[in-house]
Image (tube, rainbow, N blue to C red; front, side, top):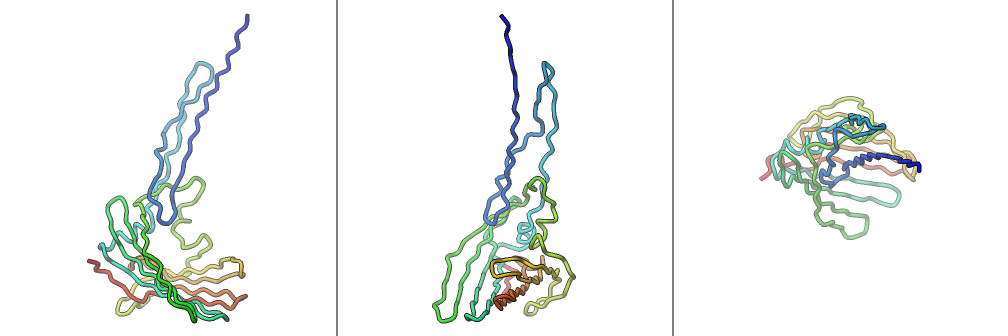
Length: 217
């Protein structure tokens, strides 16, 4: 009688990342080695460790005291009227591992009562694992299409900050939308000013910081 034995070893590594707004850092533990076997000889294969990056939101908010806040006002106009969106963001908590950022949005449309959305919060880890195949600089830009075109000194009330200026074009259902963004690490939330235009629908959007509190509680 002949005996045939087939031995197969499967090593499956599943790496998941969490880079969504409000997601907590739930990076898995990735083993550094995996075993493969050929015949009777076991060989050790090296598995690359994940690349850890500083989370941009943590890097920004962690530099401010708890309670620090920023209010941005966005005005959207087109042939149908005007919409005013007010967004308040504040630092609820911070630690060496993460920050918790609260936010509340209110919307006022032409000829309609104001809409005040309930407050919400998002948690940003100090570090996150870079998804395989993606470049680190992708997560440092406001959009994958954004281009840094210069720097400007911008006034916010009596405060002056250094801001990076980005420009790019987004594609949406209404057609191409041009975007220009001023961003500074010197304020909570980073966005100082933003201008957007969708020519096909004559929709213009202008957003800027209206109030700042850098001292917190």
